[in-house]
Length: 136
Image 1 (tube, rainbow, N blue to C red):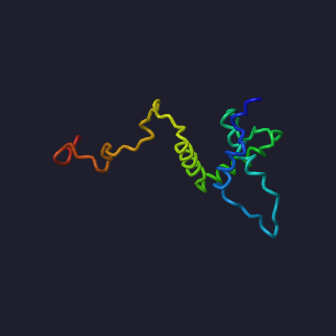
Image 2: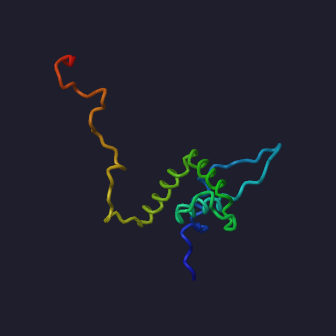
Image 3: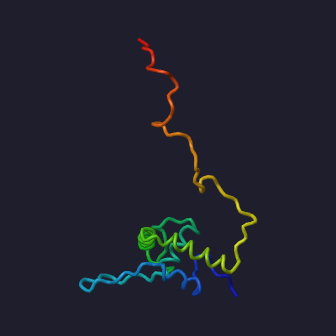
């Protein structure tokens, strides 16, 4: 059996993802073109960073829709906070299955908020007692 491609979403995973996506109803009057299926667009969104290709070069022959469709749906789902909810949902599933191994975990400083930091420029203490001397 062939290994699935990294951007392919199986039925089990799609059952987790689909309820998190916002439902978009077609307008009754002037409905426009039917939306491309969310599952295919989701796979297109995964395909682009995996291959490193530009959105506009996404081949429509793959069935994901156009690169612009995938890009717009990514923006729409980002605005609807789909990605943080998906992250939390998948982490919860992995934790409940005891499938997470934190033994080789590394935390980068850019991902952990510093509780104390350097004072901001407007709050920095003065180095002198008064006004600076005139240089003219």
